[in-house]
Length: 84
Image (cartoon, rainbow, N blue to C red; front, side, top):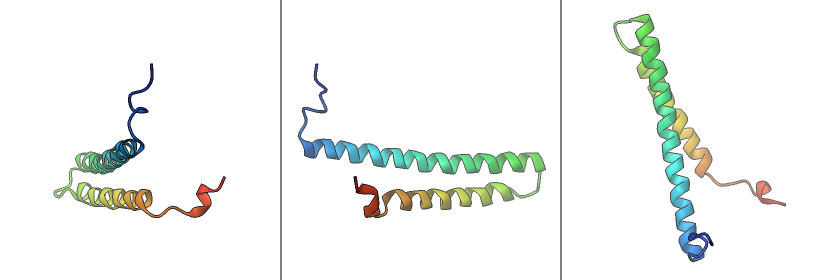
């Protein structure tokens, strides 16, 4: 049996690859933010401060980190990486 994806035209396969790449990128970004939020929430519960300082700070840090990851993954590739 042949793979049904291989029977599709190259242009259609390229669309699927882009879709999967960006879906994975989005899920990774959400995961980064959620992990940082959870750590901040956990620290705030342990310290029992009046304001959720760690949740706010680590949430913002998670957003900044996920944006840095986005820029790194979607930025222009260095030509040296593609040489065989």
